[in-house]
Length: 275
Image 1 (cartoon, rainbow, N blue to C red):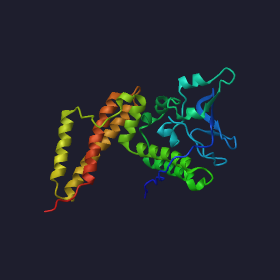
Image 2 (spheres, one colour):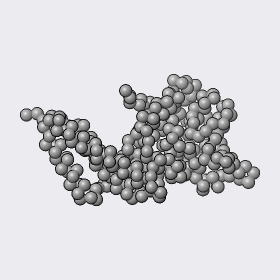
Image 3 (cartoon, rainbow, N blue to C red):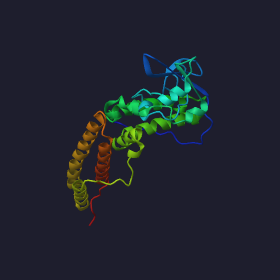
Image 4 (cartoon, helix red, strand yellow):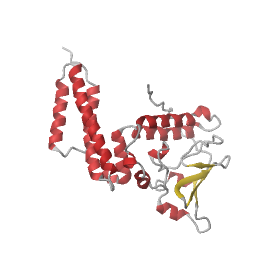
């Protein structure tokens, strides 16, 4: 049985420390692997690991990391523009990001990173990412780091919670992927179905749910709707697996999925009429 992820309570944030400097390194044989030095023991650790596997020191993470990398599903890739702006002839394979740069959003190349994953990161094993999130939460729990200010633990846990919340939901997942590849394609509450036949089908299903008087009738509607949800998810997988992916078609399918999931949520909340 799977249990809900426990969120750490939100508290007033205190200054994050240490460290104030993070070093990213890569080699010509494996340019996508980023390493940094632990500020406490100086051991090389991969990004986005935190705490340090050797000495358990909590280390802040820069903004702009993909949700997939936060759960160790992918390797972060530095953006070409940021890498070229930070390297020098003396140390062409080392980048040092000062503390203020941790808040920048343009450090990593998320589209390239997600393109290395099946269906641009849409095809996932939900049970696997749940286990990954739970394991990371154990590592980041404040009780394991009593000498460190709790705000850093909460900040890192919040990043992991957000990654799990979005990636575990097919609709939120495809919306995130679309926003990464093209912000203008991100879905919105105002997005409407463009297929009149599909809209009519959903309205009829809603009406059937409204008129249902028994749990058996609702269950039948849910079974039919589950098939629609599954079919739409498979279509999204196929669309995002193409090279190049048809992002416009993926957005249309995402809007359809939003309506089918809305019907599923309404069916879950159905209550037997009282006469």
